[in-house]
Image (cartoon, rainbow, N blue to C red; front, side, top):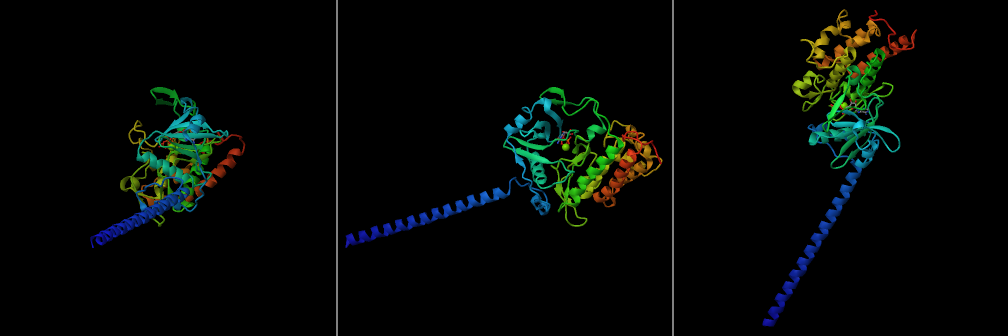
Length: 407
Ligand SMILES: Nc1ncnc2c1ncn2[C@@H]1O[C@H](COP(=O)(O)OP(=O)(O)OP(=O)(O)O)[C@@H](O)[C@H]1O
Ligand SMILES: [Mg+2]
């Protein structure tokens, strides 16, 4: 009987082996199917998500992809090498500016297009987030009053943004010209390519037009996009001027999607630039499109007065532009006193009173009292048209076309 028992055990062992073999075979085929599924879904999601998503603090309005004016312009993706050669090896002689993101270079693409190349020099999450928001938003928004993003380079070590070139640079450079603009890079001090030692101040007609075009840029973000986009860093250096001094709004790195609910707000970390941040946003972190309206009011004051928003070197009471100007804006007799002396002889009293009234409403401490950007645009359109018409009568130049102050 012993040999029969032995053969039974052998059969049992073989059966066990077969079962184990079958189980491991089905497990590995399951794993194979699962990994193929992962591979496929990853491929599909990559095709529909060209850029990394940004983690916003506010999940409900987190997806820029939800913007309903989505145009998805198909931005050009550049290699570092291409941009290196477009900017002459990121040469110092091609530097045209320096901001919070890094250095800005003048460049020429292979097809001959002039561009501005912004090279991120800031390591860390904040810089990367700003890069992502800028790319995501500008690939979807389209307006003649917003600076166009041509493309970008997103290699591990290099984050670079490529914009259309604006020959006259930032508005602030023309309001308070710096005699010799120098930058300290790699220990060397040199003049930037875009600056001019004799930068002339803008005339009244050009300032009015810039005010209108910048207002149209914000109006587009607030009212033609759903959900609205809040710029959050609207300031004179983010209004760029082309060769004919037409204005475009730039720099969306800090932008946020606003609330769709009437009177709604989003809560967020307070970011922005000193002198431009609305008081309620600075105090509570509650952000609405009215925060941009406040910043717009500050820019309007810069255009009227030729002064920087905060200058503590000025006499007591004059350091903060809004606090100094606001009480005089609605006073017919005093409003002329705050005007940029460089504008003398170019504006009429009627125009100044109207622009000052718009500025006064925009910088109201109470957000609800501030106008919508559409209202600002509507108020400025007739002023710009009227000024253009009157400055043509009897004069071919808008400079000194009118006597100041004129009733
Ligand atoms: N597309 C462009 N065309 C021409 N010049 C530009 C362009 N973009 C930026 N510049 C120049 O580079 C300067 C710096 O711009 P950048 O946006 O980096 O900094 P900023 O606006 O001064 O500060 P922030 O980083 O807070 O926005 C501008 O003032 C302008 O002179
Ligand atoms: Mg800027």
